[in-house]
Image 1 (tube, one colour):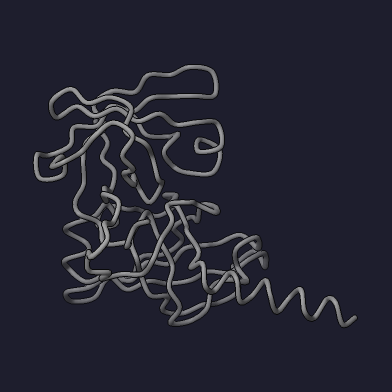
Image 2: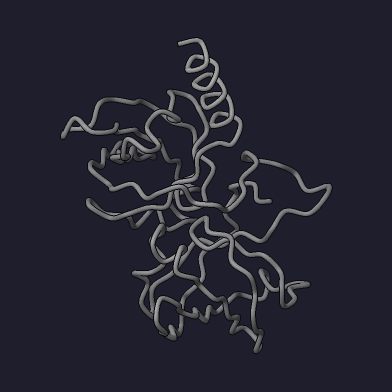
Length: 208
């Protein structure tokens, strides 16, 4: 389990490609390696990955076909960075919201609105996940627990666009501070919201 409170960013220093499979070697700062063991779970841009090797600061993670298909990690090249969060431990403060590290889809950046000391980002979301997004609801964006600001129909009429408002701390601590128009971000839907929506849909469908 994760909390959506990103602990920092780390550089991907090597990428090893195989057919529908790749390994990322990430330079994890010492503060993020305390007690880290092979088999531990670490979120990269919100994607739950398993530690497969540790060589000093160089920590390896394997990415399977489904991860490459659903997330933005398949486009990462050496020298780029990812948001990092270690798995939550019993007794940790839950500062964001409960997250699984299971990405449902990606969303595309469609607008950036600058204001003093904060920034608003707009993302276009496919109809697959649109029904789970509500104003003031939780959403995971590249592993960051955020509150949905506004929701509006997408420009193409398929799906929705939603906004998130970012404070300076989030902009400096995470990769969202460097996201540009047309960049893709990983989306995790709040589990409780998903369960409620799908339960209501099943109940309504059974009454027809």
